[in-house]
Length: 442
Image 1 (cartoon, rainbow, N blue to C red):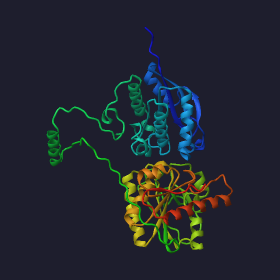
Image 2: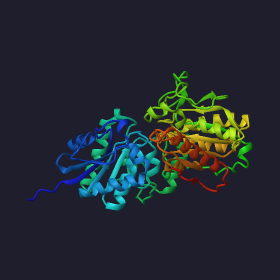
Image 3: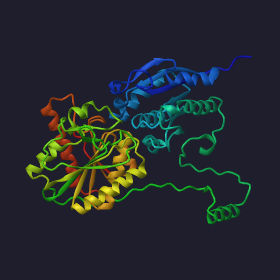
Image 4: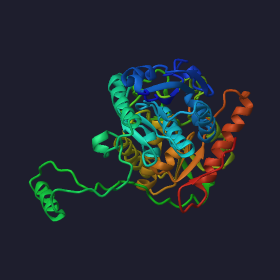
């Protein structure tokens, strides 16, 4: 009897898990590697002779996130060369750039190549909200410490696909719900099931609804700032730029606080006075010039030129890397109260990595809603703030330097930063009736 052919599998990894390096290689274009690499080797061991990892495609997080459509095109074309029958991406855990990249890859593979593809990540990864409706995303832990568990989860699901077994519900298989409803036979009538649920709720017993309702908290945009030349503008950031030495010990990830600093009389965020505490992006570029995340220099110029009435003397900052949404919401409520009391008319929020942009978007929409003033978010990956609920979004240059480009001469880079912030001011002065991504000025 002829042996059944092994299923051909291609694996997508970022630069780190493929073994090329960490942040120094985050700008790496897509590369092909024969066979399995890193976690792919562990999965190959688990599935044995039933499947074969014929290739691994690796790409730098920053390269992919800078232009997700371009990155996906290149990667899908490379994957297609190997004529796979299945594609896996990740696991991405809680990595805020890697998760959206994995989600985008498997969605595009499924659409274009018409083959099964899936990924795995933690529930706090922004990739879940971006792609859960279009792809199977398995639930795994938040960090590489959960790699063994993730390998088991991925291998089990992969074997089901290889064997062409029926994929069960999210509860049975461990993937995030995709918003699909299916009719199933129940042993009891709906009236009895409903009554049982009601009685459990009355008794304060544990119960699970049969129809969980999605929660999408998005607010209508606030009216534009009528006259910026008379407005008081505040700067808020999830990018972690704090006074040198991080005196208040702002955490590098999963921050427990948002801090207030006095910037009265300061004309620039200079590296002798400021540094980043953020653990979600390469700090090199921001530490060399903190204005790349905290654009104090050009805001002061606009203030002196009369383009804005007054730059608020308090600056609010947290680290959005891995920070849960409910905590970011509390931060936003706190800042909104402070800004409202100070008579602030509008706000610019600058953002870092993927989960940080989600935190920034939560700050943006919460401050806007609570303070009843327009807020604009400067972010490198606009699909993330769109998903979360920011109403005004200006594309940033890149995650490690949203308001600058270290490859440019200093005068040209400052002009670029001036253009980005000017576009943010235009967004604040523009009436919008729905979420709007403004012009990419670079």
